[in-house]
Image (tube, rainbow, N blue to C red):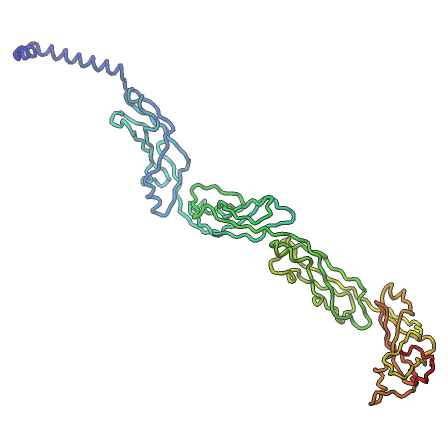
Length: 440
């Protein structure tokens, strides 16, 4: 059997080798016809940046110039392999350690599957990716709070507090330099009670516009915020004055206050306790004044603790003016019968004489009260105790004594410079009616 097999291959060996080669060739033709080599393009393959530490370890940051840039490749492989491949079977990468001085990094594409059965992978179009590299910058910012929305008329935003009031940011210098401030915003629309919330920290440019940077890192993304809502109340201003004008002058009775009311704000418990802003009379001293006296006071000096001015633009200045004018003078005739005698010891009677029935009295005043003065409304009195005519034992001898008269004038009227002196005639009672004038 073995000899026959050997004889088969030793007999006409060339012919047999040729036949074997033809068979193999026919096999290759058949195989390539059924599974030919072909080229296919795969698009939109994302580009990953690798070896980023080559940049970050140098204190720098990087950013792909065209964010989301992709690459397309032409792949040559058997049809059976191509039918099993997709875009996700390829990985495109750019090694940042190979970046050149212009920021260009070569792109490499590798197959994740069937790499040993792929004939070639060729990048179509651009073979490099552009990367922006710049210094890493850090800053610390105070967090500012703003509010939005409308409150009811009788409320305003009061004290605002944060549980954390600073934030650290880090990122590309060009972007960090665009940040002017950090802030949070609280919506207070329609609120009437204090607000406690957590709000996201936002980065703002110089115009107050929000900056949305994915590559700028914040040490905190949100903070707790407490917003006090203060109650607003309008208070009338009460006021007065102290002192007297210069001699010969008087207040006109006209006192003005501008403004005559003021809006205050504070916690409800403090606002509800106050009904007016009291400016003490000592704040306006008219002593010795000969013209209108005007004094500016600060409302905040007289506000209780916990209250402030409701309007931030309100200066809080209050102008109080007391009208002062020179007194008008004239002399009027007052009946002597209007004079009463006081503190006359028992057993004595007194008569006011030396003046006739009418006495001339100088009066001073202003306005209608002065013009319409009724002289009979002026009353006079003589106080016997003030005359100093009593002896050591308290008795008074009958006789005639000079007695100055003290006058009581209607409201708004005062006496002039002249002193009226009458003759007080004192005598003992004899048991009969003496007919004394005004004796008490």
